[in-house]
Length: 111
Image 1: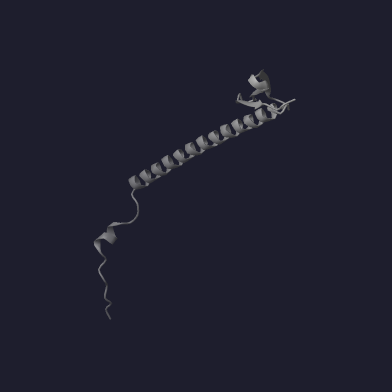
Image 2: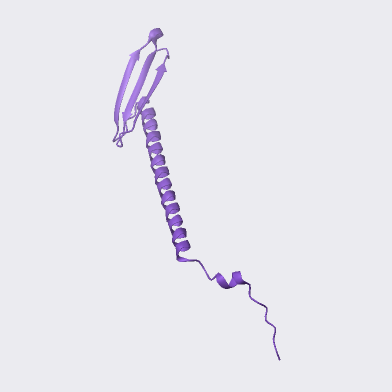
């Protein structure tokens, strides 16, 4: 009894996996991609941290305009008399991370 065999195509016989060069190139591309993503993540983290610190400085400046002191912050207040009996109040703050903010308001309420 004989069994029929189908001939194996020549491209199936030659391909037996990835070559060393292909594997090394793939690993290099993967390493470069991961490195770029980590660098991007670090930049985003730093940017968000700086933004948060600046927002905190604005909040402290707002509190300083209301007359409240916040521990750990240098607060400088100024008042200037303006025409019409108005008073220009300015608060400048400097925080622990050297973030600064300055807010001003014009108070024209009658005594």
